Image 1 (cartoon, rainbow, N blue to C red):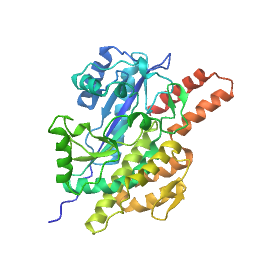
Image 2 (tube, helix red, strand yellow):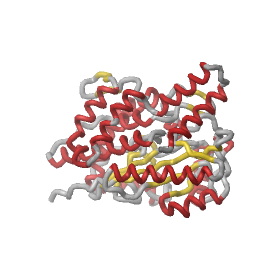
Image 3 (cartoon, one colour):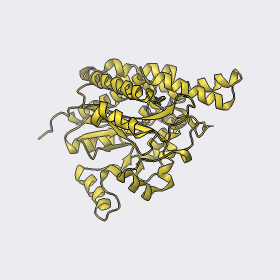
Image 4 (spheres, rainbow, N blue to C red):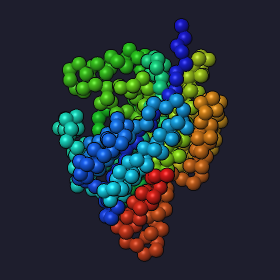
Length: 376
């Protein structure tokens, strides 16, 4: 008997970095009153992160992308307003332009303390932020099948999100350095292919039973079945400084899953490629963002990113229209044309240097840009 169509509900999680408005550096030790005030205002939609300079928010379970956008706008504003009362601001970027990981303080929470004991310096270096998108897929077998198929499109979504060209005051040469930091952790990157939910569970249990990991939340793949919700969670994306860019990535992800499910019910499948090939496109997205082509494995050629976006929009247009997010999906054209947060950060940096600023002044100018563009 065929399973019911997934609900394709949407939830978006974002991690913000908290900066001091005067120094532009990360606030490594904010007072307890800061997080307490956020919890009073936002309740369960806000949470501390491993580093005290970070705040994580999560939208409600939303029936549509427009609903998720409205909640995300509210959450960014509320967190920033609370930060402002302390002389702080938030930035939506996956790395801070010049903060040092060695200077950060961790949150005293048992789960984080346990992770630090296990991961040591690998975890302490994680001065990075991301965006996670949950899409409701209630049937476990469908969830696994769509996870196998969606992997092909992860580089495209990743490239649209890039927002971390700096690390510790250095120009990295990458549009997304965040992934270079994160992949030092175990159980990251692309998930394996699984033939069924049962096979996935058996693999998880091999690690859980002897106590190697606590549960499936310790699988930090680029896309994964959520261990807490009946969703498929996109994790590869940088956090987008421009809120509309993040909404577009969520809309594309939701629409791609709908398209793949529609084809699935028609006994059609997206061709699966090896992790070796998909990883090559992920690297290209990490290195170049949208400024260089990705491989189209079907034709065996590099294709300009703007052309790939046109193909992607055409591919999911029917599903995006049904889901009520066609306009958001089409916004991918604008990102492909004018660049991502990383592109804009680099423009600000080089323009400042070109007008006589020191490197530190140029990096501070990038923080100012991020503060200005994070909240709408």
